[in-house]
Image (tube, rainbow, N blue to C red; front, side, top):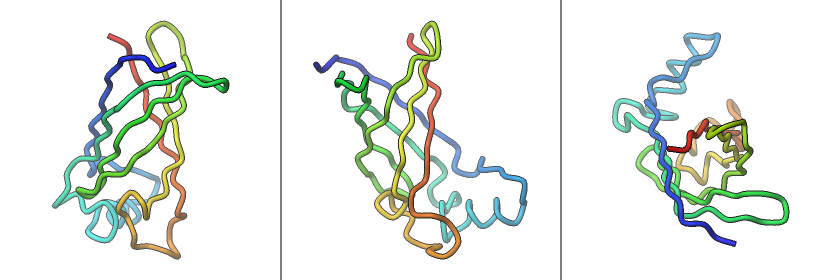
Length: 115
């Protein structure tokens, strides 16, 4: 069953923070996110559907100016709050450098609030 819906999220690509300032600089730098040239990471939904396993949110993830299809699994967190998560393969999402430094699969998680 498909349900008409719409959601979007925009993240500041330079907002990546870990416990290592050097790593943060590398990740937001030209080799990885290139936050100077591509200041945002964005997600926009293209549909929401129910499966036997639960609700899935299909959409497009834009990283470094590159669009890739992604399907997020929705979990109800209470009230109008949902958590959407997926594993994204960074090479397919436009981040091809860093083969030995970071893993190819990267887990993303979005907090969504129904309006």
